[in-house]
Image 1 (spheres, rainbow, N blue to C red):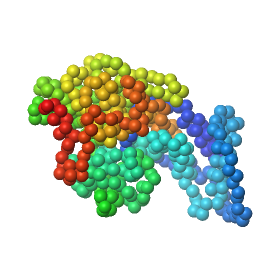
Image 2: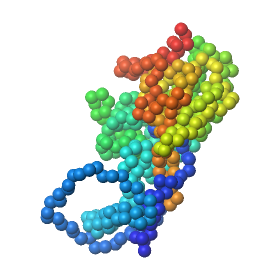
Image 3: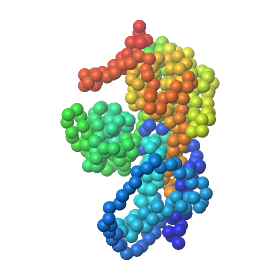
Image 4: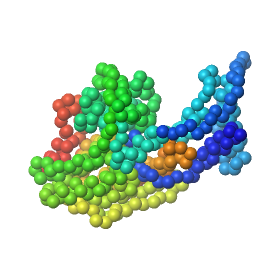
Length: 422
């Protein structure tokens, strides 16, 4: 009875993952439950022995299989259930955790799409990710990171954060987390292992130049700064937006109101290391700088498109504008910077952006407090430029040298200030 229930549950879940969902977060780069299944199969372990080698005949590539009827689904899932039963019957360490197996099956199914942004989020990961989008606290080490490379790269620790106090530095590469090698693990998945309960220690093995060292960091509750702003010398306004969450638009407008009241001669809008966030927030933020026109196109798998236009009433649609971007500028940040660039509304200074031009649905699973994120579309800039895997090329390229980093010089910000002082 239980086996039939679980079988039906997973098949229905597979269908729901393809067609269901509620639009929680628009664009993501970019971090509890009781056991609701008892042991499904309780059999005496046995040993399966094979003495003859198995020959595999190579032929044409396997055709795409699309099951549409219940009968086709039943046939398609036969190898899965056979594997399930063999595992329970033969695995050396019993009993098995069926909930962990079920979650692993979902994770493997989503990973099989080949899209690193389509993945399973366990309850803790799902809660952490949604907390950040809601502008709440999360527990972690407090560092901006780039997950685009082979390993997570530290962009900068937040001032006064546990990462800062422990001595984590920009350009540190995280090779292992709590002794577990991160080779081959997608950066956004590895990042979730850095997060965890406040008060617990996470040990990061990092490569710093030619040196490899372990850094122990005690996690704390981190309040992610959303907007930082100030008036720079020479009458230049400066705003740094760290994330596109639910409170970002309100805080950005407050900063603009404060700064524009001082009649600045120009505005530097810093989107460096901003990994993105909500699509709706990206449109709102872009509309503060672009007065009219298409902000972005969303293109779906069937070739259809949906367009998103600027909303009226932007506060900074006329002021001279520079936008700072770098390798950590991703997703919603690229939507905003791309619209500003296409309309010649401002000048992009810095390094080529990350290149995440895809849109994910974050879909909560009904049976537990976990969820999945599924790539449902890719987006194009107003001039129909594809960003995914390419990124935005700055109008003025300014790159950091090792000497700049050692000296603590922000040469990109200096270039933006010089732009207004010419």
